[in-house]
Image (cartoon, rainbow, N blue to C red):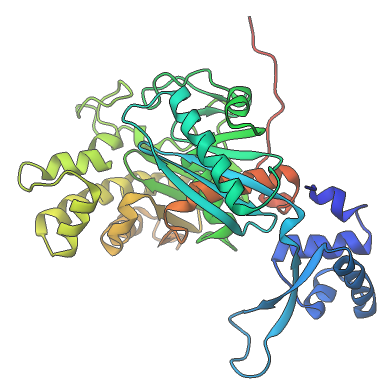
Length: 401
């Protein structure tokens, strides 16, 4: 399998410009390639013929919103799927997902496995290895050169290591080398909410928007920030941890040790705990079934939680000025109840003269957002994403002591 640089060759050549245009924009017709790469049509034809002959590019049907409904479909040029691939792994609180995608980010195989309650690192990695091997086999590709891994807790991205936290007891100190040994692939570690943001930015509801805030409204509440098309990643963990913003200093004790964190009022367990004295509800599925049936108590609990999330999101919006706020996670399935409440708070808290209230939308990748972000970070390391979409990795520095 190849990196983009090994396939594209020297920067500035017609070959590199054509492949860079497809990398940046996706499949393009020959006419679109000539405009995007600033090349004469005859040059595009000559280079494309060579790239097709060596199976670097293949023709595919292109469907765009501006395409006419009648007449023949346009033929576009895209990367040959077998050029390269990567694996995206997403550890959740009770499940692990593994997804294999080609150089264009198109999923080739996807699988999910259940994890035991309070699973430890060794057990979780053992189950993940079995799943990774299975999806690679189903994808029918050679073993990919790397994998992105989403972890539901703080990550020291500088040293590529899981940071000690109450969210993942027993995982502290597990670094990329330990993950590589367990999974049989070089690994890039990142927080799951950050990768949800990168996944939606690269392949989902954040496409075409340079500045977004993605909120993972789930068993815990986290956020990922994209600024100027770049993922903002906490070097030593802690970036996007909005679930641990204090909303009431006298509030309930949080698992992090503080009082009154957003998680204690608005996470899925907090919503269920609030409703449970009045309704028999033990899962997100049961909660959403009550909402769909028109249960006023379920709607009120979800709306109150979303308002709390909105208050924290409004502060982030005033600091970062995102163009779009994307809601993912289990509570995104509540739809308008959540987005309307968050939008209401954003409008109330915005500076009236500024007209900078961000759009609030649901993610478009279902529950694959973090896995697709892990794919993006893997392909980015291989050079298959545009440079502006690839997270900058800080240089590793020796630890003191």
